[in-house]
Length: 388
Image (tube, rainbow, N blue to C red; front, side):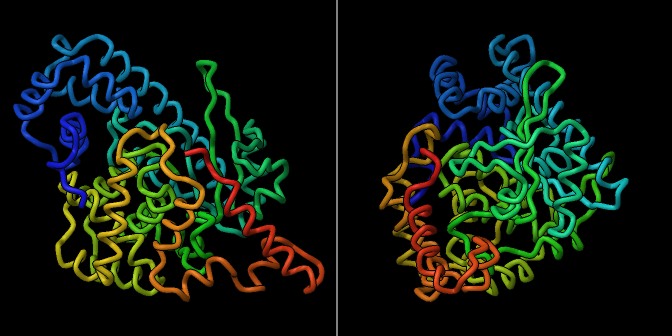
């Protein structure tokens, strides 16, 4: 099982640093002195967390006592994420002028509206959500701002039609320091290929319930929607794939900064058949980061304890840390994802979606083509995925 005392000393220190509720400064300093700066720096580099740990060290040791390389990592990330947030605000304002609401998703929304210490919210891109009917107009506005349509996925998406079919588009944005930002415009809130379309919340509903953030035209998902969305996003990354363990801070920070209606949240999870996926997304930060999640919530969602214990052991075995390492074989990855469904019927619907959805997604012209389209989709699910 996943327990904090079974982690490496470096992993335990990382959990101390990440926890939104915080721990006594003296405990952080004691563990830092025990492990040594070199050991912690090497671990932080492997985790892509030099700025996160550096921010904590700057806070507890003071600027003068914090080694320079940590301070440089903090300052570099603060500048970079600050530029990301400027582009988010720029896009949101341009869309708002045309009557298009935009929601900042996942770490983008958390950094802009909840946990605003930018050095401790590193991210590789900015993710936003618009309504399906606004997607094409939003694309045109972003292109007018200088956003360049591009694609990093294995699908080699080259035009807006293909991007729309996949649930969203990616853009490269030139920043003032000569670097680039990847900006993801989505109309599907999660767009995981192993998450059934009927399990995803509707973008229109999420936008209608979203809340404003001060100082920006970008909006934030309401707390229950936000928590469910990041739980599904963590599941989409199989809990351990890049960017790795820091993904679990999304859940931790939302439950720390927001008041959650837990009954409403659990009702939504149960209606969509996502209890296993969400349970794992909650129990890991609860155990390792001390996230403020009621035991009653975990008990309610723990409908298959044997399966959940199996999956937690599997996650422990492949490793919570080391996001650049390969975590799964092709077969292992597929089997793990199938176990995230609450029932065999759910597995069947995931592998063989309804014909209506297949038609919208793949736009085939004859019912006789459906078997071949299913074969094409199965091939994609098995062989087209990220290297981790």
